[in-house]
Length: 444
Image (cartoon, rainbow, N blue to C red; front, side, top):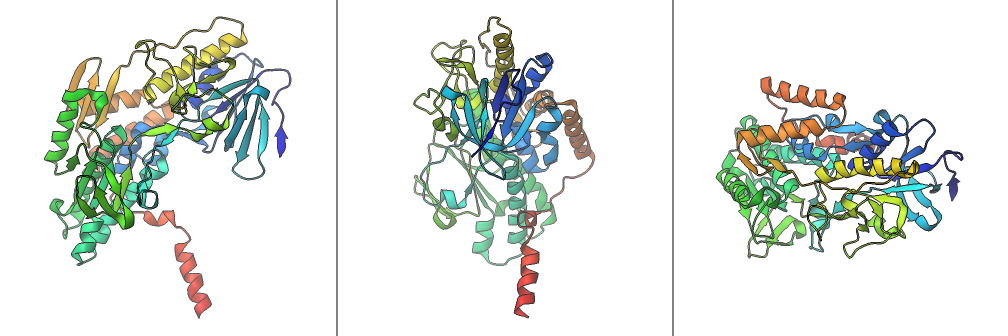
């Protein structure tokens, strides 16, 4: 195993594990606040970009170009060293992390200060058929795939006279009634309904959209009233919302629910929660029962003043609600990153660190074009007003002016031109045509 020395032997080295919300925003603030040669920064992430996840539903629906909701790490972090790879273990007792790069042998990187921000992964259950046929909705690749897949299912249904094949192709199941599931379903259903204009063989009644939620409500963050409104709005659009219901099997794409319902579906999207990144268990840092790294109110790791943690992978105490922890959402992650970076600077300069304290402002959710729900600072909105607030809020949070301008340009063009409804599923297998041609040549 190769060993990568500290990038600077004369200045402290800060290693940031993860280039998501916490990782990128921490590095951004550090490179602005640190003086020249005060410290060096290394960011390690499998991807070379940060994804603004709240816009994934709009990417899937075709409102936004995929490249406009990702931020290139190397472009926005010119003063940091960005490594594309996966941290596989951390030995904080010896201040060493093992990194497996995209290619080549694993490398050990030494550090003086550690920032753990690997985020979370989808929380799955041992349901038969789920691993083989399900897909999540946490990254840009999944959003692009679902867009192409849904449009491809419409093409497939319009190209067959077999009713069983058509019914299966046009059945879409989403499991999980949180933001990811509800927004993804609502945006994709809205897109598919609009695409039917180009499929005269099909009608809205031919499509079946099903939302399965194990609890008795959806979108709990927006409150009971707005949650009930969302259920009513989805059902008004013909979406089958199943509350207090669980998926028990998806073998051979046959959906079996615990209320006795069985049917075949060509699409199964799993958005039933997240769990801390498994990397946490490959460290010597203290964990709670859920596998989160135990944090103090100063965003340091409990028992380690030179290790910091924030975001989905950490159990950060919520000082506004004693005894509880901060929710794993973007709102907390961005604000924690700023406080975390300031506390690192304070530590380097021998100054006092400050505790993280932030009251939850509320939540906004899009339910398709011109429709949404919001509960912000006690104010409840729905319909167009909530949809407008959703776009306005997230536009203000998208990193960099470059991305803000590109997002506004996409939205502006959408006011004058219909969105594209072409399925480009072939990009997921770019060599298929070449392999077919090569096989025919060999046969000849």
